[in-house]
Figure: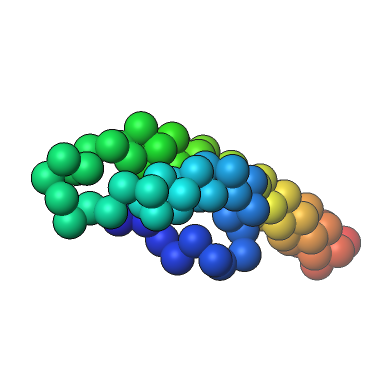
Amino acid sequence: MHPLLDQPGVEACRPAIDALQKCHEENPGKSPLNWGRCTEFAVALDKCLRANSERKHHESWERSRDRQKKQRKALRKLKKKESE
């Protein structure tokens, strides 16, 4: 199941989203003859969304690491002032 595809942050996957939606419009899933025809588009969308999620996670991790470095530096500075 895909997340809401009209949410911010999935713009990079817009071509894959559009391709899957077009496939679903052209191949309604009610007929067994159409089952599985859009699988390749769904897999491509899954890969794009996964890569997008991993990129966001990495960016968040980087911001957290930078924030922790600043906090450690401030704490060292404070301890140095207290010891003087």
